[in-house]
Amino acid sequence: MHRVVSRWAAALVVASIATSARADNFNLFGYGPRAAAMGGAMTAEATDYTSVFYNPALMVERKDVNFGFAFQWYRMVADVQPKDLAQEVNCTNCTSPDAVGFSLGLVFPLGGKVKNHLAIGLGLYLPSAVMLRVNAPDPTTPFWYRYHSNPERIVIHTGVGIKIVEWLKVGLGIQALADLLGNGANVKVDLFSKEVQLRELNSYLGTRVAPVFGLHVSPLNKRLRLGVTFRWEMKLLYEIPATVDLATVGTLSFAVTGVAHYTPHTLSFGAAFDITEQLTVSLDGEWQNWASAPSPYANLLIDLSGPLLDGLGLGTALDVTSPAQRPGFADTFGGRLGVEYRLSPRFQARLGGFIRPTPVPKQNVAGTNLLDNTTIGVAGGIGFNFDDPLEIMANPIQIDIAAQGHFILGREADKDSTDVVPSYTYSSRVGGVTASIRYDF
Image (tube, rainbow, N blue to C red; front, side, top):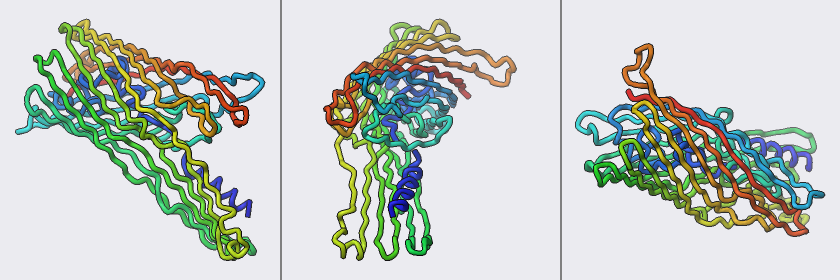
């Protein structure tokens, strides 16, 4: 029986696909090089296809169809060390994998009677290797709450922008993900003949969507622009059950459940001001409702029951439930700053930065080892455009390049001497580049 239970436990771990992203790739690294270079301060300044994420109300600002395609690469360099060098920390997940992927976007202003008053858009991020990873490390294994597996998730945003009057625009968008659900596996086994009499599996990805609301105001001849965006929380629910009917012995029920890829309710508000015709400064504030975040750890339920076991008084003696522990997160308020200087109609230079407070409390208790702390980000980049030398494209082609660095401040986890995990310190740096090509049709 132990062998049967072990095999099914292993099978279910594999079936869970590998979860852990806590904020989508756009929020973590920025959507497009222009946004990345300006620290993500785009709520009032996303003037291209990236507006579908930052503020769907801004899509209606486009007069032509705008398309963009980008590539990104980011790498983490982490330092996780036990305080007592004679002890060891399980560092299987102490460094997050590289964040490599592609993104594209499209803003399509409609014509006819709604010309200059209605536009639709689409934004998409595709990881280079894994479309969607679900990976919940064991509570005794330290892992980076925001960065571990975070980019390994497809991101989909779509929306519509509406101009009410010249100085007021509103937007409505949808972000999409999926739940991993189903009836799981059903197996019937005759232990005496060692025969599998039934084996079936039924699991699926169920669509999950959440709304995005945007508002944009330009009261001073568009030199000053104000924006507000609210993104509803997003998460992936996974439920992977299995039932093994052990003929004449009992029924083994096994279920792994949890929440992955959680992004909290987020309220972003920003202002962009053209100091001169060449110089724009953009400032964003961001509130995130992390206090409502669920536990990032997987829940396990094992139930072994049946007439024979009940008769022996063992109906509940072999049941197992994993301990439940709230993460104890706190709401955060961060800030972003971006500057763009247009040296000429052909060339732009950009700088930016952000501060992102951590919602994660100190990990000084047993049963949780989430690595995170306040993060300081710095960024810079350039943009330039040129005419198509082959004269195939009528309009200039825009190229944008950005580099970004995240500095996760050092922190300590002071564990009790009875904890299986020793006390440790940790910090990290994340750096990378992104580049894109944009074109107005």
